[in-house]
Length: 372
Image 1 (cartoon, rainbow, N blue to C red):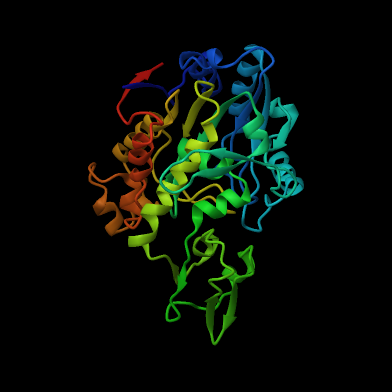
Image 2 (cartoon, rainbow, N blue to C red):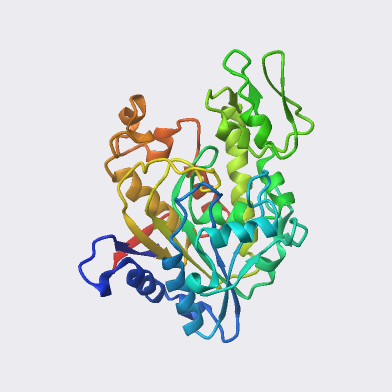
């Protein structure tokens, strides 16, 4: 049974501010013991797509950076380039987006290193020998880092159900080639539902979509399976065969999470921010209203226990009026037994992240929650 440390959002003094609690969680979880003098320590986070504002506040990141440096290590902020053609598909645009979102050195206190290079070419092949993959393609700077602190915004996701520490490791530490391997799914267009708006055509990084005969068509040979077309489709005309695709997708994701930390055993700490729990990933160029009130920040040495604790807290929370979790039949499914994200998106199998990660030895779903 793993320990997960929790700090609520209640505050009544500077010493009990969220920034102070982040530093206290770093200490309570024992992150300093993971770091050695002069370590190059990756602070893995998501800088947010342009237009998104749900990402972790850089002021909170600064608390972690300061603690890493106090431990004698040398921190750098890092993430990997995206498959889709947004404002983070290459290191130049990605770094610019990070700075525009407040992650410059003056605020966050550490340099930005895009871990897979200018166009995703910097990668390390990691041997894992699991069910779906014998090897995985992990970003070079993350592979080369001596230690890592993983900071994750806990929120919903169109395909994974929810995104926390495991997903941050999996998609967030993979090169574009690794991201393609994980997705490996092929959506289809319902021509009756399609309104031919063209948003999917604009966002597709592979040029696999076109408008023809009054609706979108997908070239399945060119499709990367990134799922961005589904995210932007307001008519919900683009879907996967959810029953058969999402189980294997979720397992592939977990195997990449395993690969990201496989060569750093006992050198990785995890912190999840259960604040602004949006229905969609921070990769979306928007942030919708939160589905539950802000809950707090959690930290652990066990990514599975951490994600499980966050999932439990969100699922027990009262849905916010007007949110995606509070709409009609969705609200009816949120009964305290069904987790909040599967209630919101019944086709997803987010808990498979946790069960499969436990199967392959990444940690335990059993935890003790210790409030600081």
